[in-house]
Image (cartoon, helix red, strand yellow):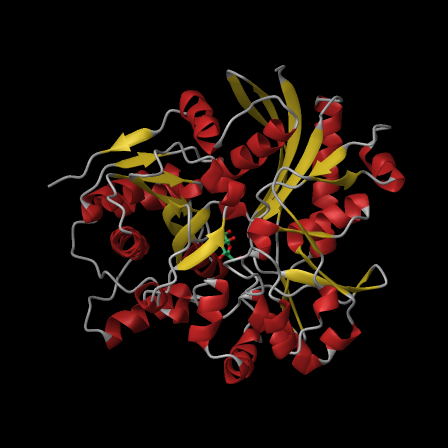
Length: 473
Ligand code: LFR
């Protein structure tokens, strides 16, 4: 085995980045070479992702990647889940919608009228989220777009298609559509047909580690390279890549991948499809190497970022570290609200919605930015702790520690309060778990490292030793 370099493209809900990873048997090193904002756009028909703007950012970042490391062996792409572009004859039909667009509500009703939720759960194992692809497609049907399309590509696969011309659906992300059979891991074409979704739009499935294709000539010119660099499928659902890089002992640990969302769960070998799991709204998403990500979506740092956005729109300037320090100093009792309340999904005035929840539930309404921030942190930590305990109960696992990775692992108050509220030690980091998971799966495909996920996680633990937060009495 020799050391080599790969490029990871990681698209998040607020920003995208391109990272060069250098990996060898005892080496794991990351260098961020590109960063660009992801700014959703609201137009007359709803909330969209600026897909071409994102693609421009990807191309810029990859240009820098090949300049920094001309011999990169491959490129891997991950992003948030569920969202997609529709195509006809290779041409994108319109601008992809953002999962927070409220049009999917109508799709939920239409879908459940044909296939009730408990049957859906038996077939796809997914928690109910109003924006699961299957509901969004039902809304497209209503708009007539679905009949025009001959191909659907999830966001990371769509970027890969622009680079290589190859259309595939990577399995971890395909598992979030609601159209993948949880038992076989193949498209559930019977379900799709019953829902009026043309099965011809579903691309060929590929697994993490498989080669997708190589850069098209135009893309090589754009990137300033004459090498036909391969695009390799990674855990293209960002959470799947993040879980690869959690430095945990999977049999006794829970993980929280905390960014915009807090994805809280355990890694299993087989799905849990019980009534109790369905009622607790736990999902069985596909992991790398056929593992199961048994988890629940908690609202995450979105509550904080959307509050900050509201205050800034109102003319205030917010410095996040200062706000969190002030939140840590709050001594007044603050409300612990239900962070999972659906009223917090759509963009908007988050502080007002939190205040509204408090008034409805007889809880103290926060009176300052610091109190709001503290209330958000306490509420997230409580929801995290509850989800960890539920995951353990539903899966029969004994959980002895909680790993927090992603942006939330830098939030010391959140890590400490999660330890306090769960009564379990919290191990924080790495912050760039998603990019690391993306890099490692490519590095393994290239032969720079070998072994199962445990071997990859050992490498992560060695390169990025987690920080420990012990629960306080
Ligand atoms: C996290 C994430 C979650 C998914 C949500 C919407 O970035 O991918 O796993 O439920 O975004 O796609």
